Length: 128
Image 1 (tube, helix red, strand yellow):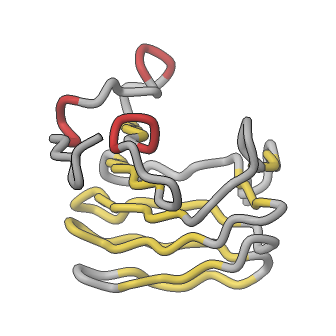
Image 2 (cartoon, helix red, strand yellow):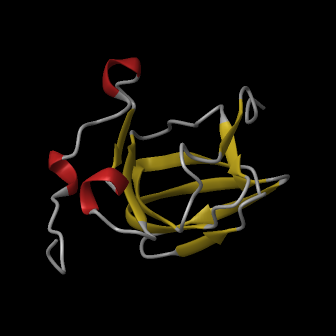
Image 3 (spheres, rainbow, N blue to C red):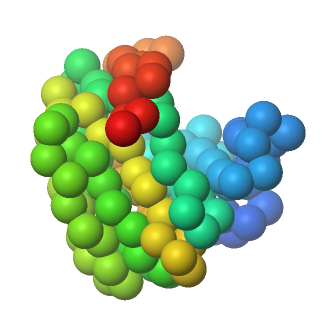
């Protein structure tokens, strides 16, 4: 096995697919061959708000805003996000994102996770 992996996130399949024209979600974990890291790219069209939130049983995540701006709901708190903000989120914190008028682009970095994942969906969580 090589000591490195090079992957273009635009070439990773869009997991949102036909379900939403408002979101691109590209999960590169299985493509990079890392024992400990997951890296994903998310793009939200202007004004889009994710109604569903999620948390994890074990996996802490960090998000880097690489384009646009928006907000994140973290449990019951809402924080503003701008270009180059770095947001660390503890595993148990429920999170969801809303794009500003220019949209929102994020890189998400996750740590080790159990086999099969540890995400916990919170449907209809940010609806007000």
